[in-house]
Length: 238
Image 1 (tube, helix red, strand yellow):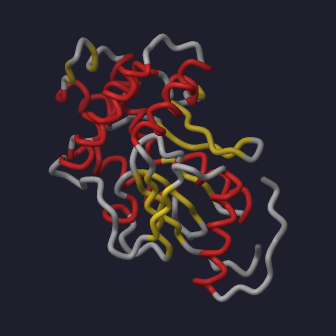
Image 2 (tube, helix red, strand yellow):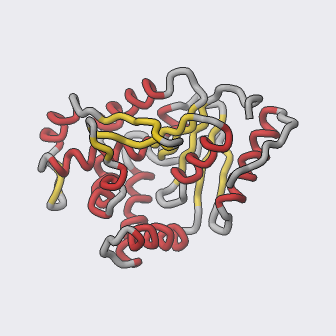
């Protein structure tokens, strides 16, 4: 859809609302570059775990600080998808596992970790025409983004979605554990002193509790048409 200007779209919201899936679909449908800020925090967490500075319920911040400076985390566009790499190794599968999920929220609450990630996100997004998802993209990372979306859904529905994803990957957990982890992450993300999760005043709310992915993309199309005065309506592939 060439008439959409080269803007930055910020997608924020609670965990397991499908922010990444939604942002990837929008990137594909409307030819935007997709960047996953959450993947960056997960990449830092994975690197810390592999270096032995994260584990056993603890985070060695000084140890993490020593490895994060030269950490070669970067995105690559491959076969129409954006994947996170640690050096020459694709880590998309590892960062989505249950082990990383248990530590990513406290790691992402560390102020200097957030600053490190923000600096890289700004570098990746130079030139615009980017859609990025996370928990503070529209409030802290890109407060002047031309379009902001805030995603939410019923906690029970979010927990079921996340549980189904983990089971499909062969992870061993229970729905109760997933719900407890989700509620803990919601609280941590909303109450952290640095860049807490909150809805930007100018964000459009997308509650997808009872929506399909196709309905979400149609909702976004209507929003883009209304906001930018677009007349044409491209055929959606999803």
